[in-house]
Length: 79
Image 1 (cartoon, rainbow, N blue to C red):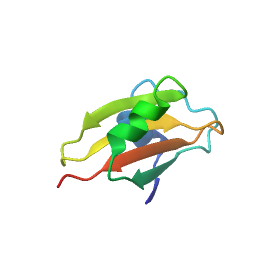
Image 2: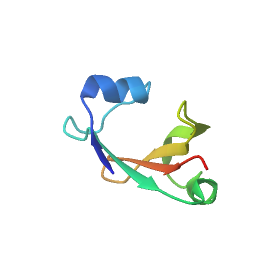
Image 3: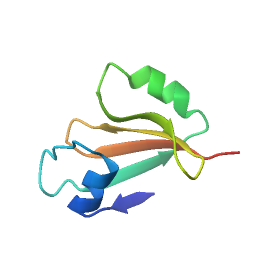
Image 4: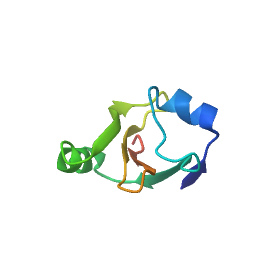
């Protein structure tokens, strides 16, 4: 899934976010069957901008910023 977001919505979803470029308001969302394993592997190795959490719709997800400044969200849907 690719989510194009306005700057306002992006800042709502990621409080304190300082966009690296004005045009990087793209959030790439990757579905996984084991998001915790991905989180454990990348934590401490990259900039996590939203810690692993359970969303209001029951998914487990976290977000990071890639080296180009884009936001990548990894999500595992509830069973």
